[in-house]
Amino acid sequence: VARRYAALPDNVVMVGTIRIDLARRQLEREGRTIDLSAREWAIVELPARRPGALCSREQIEDALYGLSDDVESNAIEVFISRIRKKAGPGLIMTVRGRGYCLAGNAAR
Image (tube, rainbow, N blue to C red; front, top):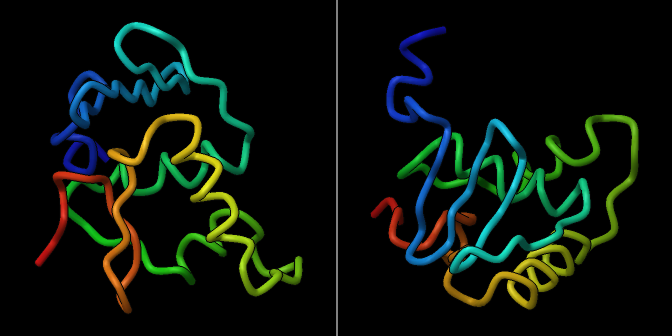
């Protein structure tokens, strides 16, 4: 377990001026707290816990809904859009045909 979290010793990820505090489940931009719903937070948290990795649409759907709920075709895009409106466009990056990652952490 210790090896999994070695990259995030203080559970804080910085993406430009955005600070993601995984322990407190809090997102801040320039010192201002940004309120996210539980599902929006799950989408931000998934790539934040895996710096440099891409998160596929299927991984995000599993994190949000598990196996029990049906997912609308554009639900993930709607949540991503809401996050971008709240936090700004510089947080989550779309890698066409592959998935999503935190900006600045794109796996090539």
